[in-house]
Length: 304
Image (cartoon, rainbow, N blue to C red; front, side, top):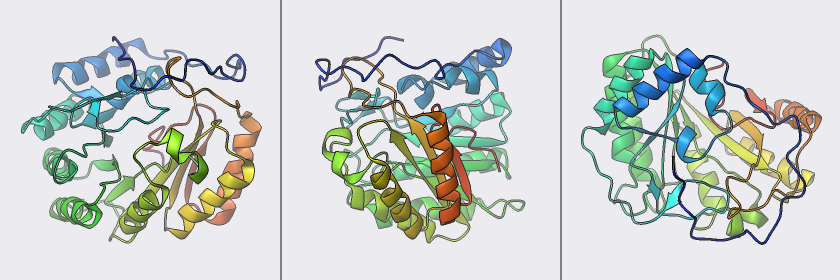
């Protein structure tokens, strides 16, 4: 697919070094990869796997899993790390929820991850589409596992929480104690926010996670990218903030530059350093932790 040129340009800044040998992925099951691709494209859906140039796309699609992206492929924000294009979205499709359910049925999924672009142009930030899709998925398969990776719902967090949680309550699974995982990525440490997450706010993201964690039978989840210039102590402080907000699930991964226009990699974190962060997170009390160079927020999300 042709990739859009971002609205920012960091091409004058170089990565700290060449990509190390441990950051590699292989296509493990071409047949399942093709089946997943057909299910997504035949239903004219977007995936964060493609739009954000995820390094795990080959692995996940080869195993028949994908993270479906709602509300189109154009974001109203311009984060310096993200490959999703920025612009004025026009996407609106009242049938999207049903098409997502059809694609999930075609892929035979038992657990699905839904995300979206930021849609600051919509009155509800897109919460209604998330809610409709939750209902459609559970109507198709009453006990399917559902994980959302949502934007921060700027200026409408309580309303978005209520809209989505009503849908979860309307479509409760009789077999699942945790009705849904609500993910929102904190992404980086506070002092890097202005450059890394333009238009976002650290405290706002923490507040959404805190609200999500307070909801009945919902687990909150977040993720950080490492290698953008943060220090070990800063990472630990963010983990403490997340745990204090009630976040139960945590993903830590290496930032990889999608194009030359995006922010440069300041450090390639060693695999053993990720292992050490995982140990510290578990000691803090996180119940579910994934940490490694190629880990992303929805990587192996279905793992218990």
